Length: 127
Image (cartoon, rainbow, N blue to C red; front, top):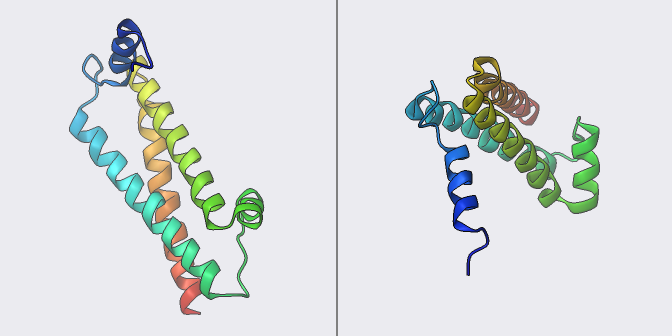
């Protein structure tokens, strides 16, 4: 069963490829590995640990706080995944357009925000 006709599948694969862009696939992989490590793993894991083991600490982001109140940890992880994949899509789209700013900004911002909040969360856990 095919979800996309062959022409559409090929067009999608071309759109997701860095082949005809000025950017290197290895660099792309490294940037997004760091973003995954800092934001995806570090921030998410320390936020879940902090909310689970510290009853006095609440989520500072009101949108995430609402998602956690409604859906528990799944809400937190779901919103973080939406943010992550939106940034990934933005970066891929910018690569296709040759736009350096919007190619580099999403993974760098996620990496820095993730590293900062990971350290901040660990600091809160340690008291």
